[in-house]
Structure formats: structure tokens, C-alpha cells
Length: 208
Ligand SMILES: N[C@@H](CCC(=O)N[C@@H](CS)C(=O)NCC(=O)O)C(=O)O
Image (cartoon, rainbow, N blue to C red; front, side):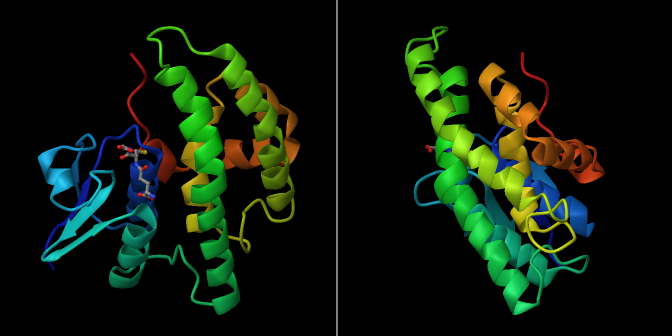
């Protein structure tokens, strides 16, 4: 079988999720930490985003598509259950992750701190407004993991893998840390899954 290549900077929550899938399944891969819009990435993603994947003559972009391909083609525990009901629930949570949680938590809240429009000066009024909106999302996730400590079924799936890197980043900043800390089920969920080898082995290097 040809080598599996995962391409994309380690700081990306989506690159992190795809690498976690490989680790959870015990799939060996070659990792190329490329930034968005570099030639290797542009060759595969029509809009230059990360992650992208190469496996022999198969190239893919979009983390969900990459994760599904790896789950189907390689051995190891399924991260998308074959049971149609559970599989559809994973699909639902990944979609919610990408359309709702990533949009607010990462693109607005975390990016508001890390890449402020005025360098070195995060817009705290805007961040405060986003943080208010995030409270509802945190409450939704807190309820969702209350039953089994997983978003779907009673084992780790792509639904969890997709959301864990997002929660890690939100937890780095004051408002996020406070609201996640107050969400008891979600805090326990984070503590347990942040301790997984797959999560720690693929974590981005510490911030400079
Ligand atoms: N829906 C895509 C999102 C990928 C994405 O937004 N990647 C970010 C890094 S986390 C990126 O490449 N941003 C560069 C840009 O938007 O130009 C996926 O699931 O892979």
C-alpha cells in the first residue's frame, strides 16, 4: 500500500483531528506541516485550505472526507460507526462542529485573540459579544456528553475527534476557560479525552 501523507500545519484544529483519526486507528502516516496556500496544499485544495491528503493517486481535501477515507481504507477501530443510526449521528455532529462550533469558537473567538485586526490588540468588545453567543453552544455540548461521556454512542467517534481540538483552543482564553470550567459534564469530557495518547501525540507545539 502507498504511504499516506497528511499535509497541513499542526495548529489547525482540522489537521489535528485528521491526525488523531490516524493515531486512534493505528494508521502510519507521513506528516508534512505545511501552511495554507502553499504549493503542496494548493495542488490539492481548490481554495488552498488545510488539511489535505495524498495516498498513492488519491488526493483529498476537507477533513471529514479525509477522515471517512482513512476509516474505510485502513484497519483499526471505526471512528464512523457502521450502524446507520450512529453513523448518521456522527455526520450530524461533525456538520454541527463545522457549521456552528468552528465558525463561532475558532474563526471568531480564538482567531479574535490570535490574529487581531490590529496586531497585538484584540478587539475585546467583539470578543465579549462572541463569548456571550458561545454560552449556548457550550450548554448544548455539556448536555450532549452528559449521558455517556461521548457525543455519539458510548465510544470515541469522529464527532468527538472533530470537536476536541476546538475545545482545547477555547479553553486557552479567559472567557472560554471560565465557561468550559462551569460546564461540569463537558469539563470531565475534556479532561478524559485530552489525556488520550492520540490527542497528546498530535497536539500543536506550545505557543511562542
Ligand atoms: N471545512 C474544512 C475547513 C478547513 C479550514 O478552514 N482550514 C483552515 C485552517 S484550520 C485554513 O486552511 N484556513 C486558511 C484559509 O481560510 O485561507 C475542513 O474541514 O477541512
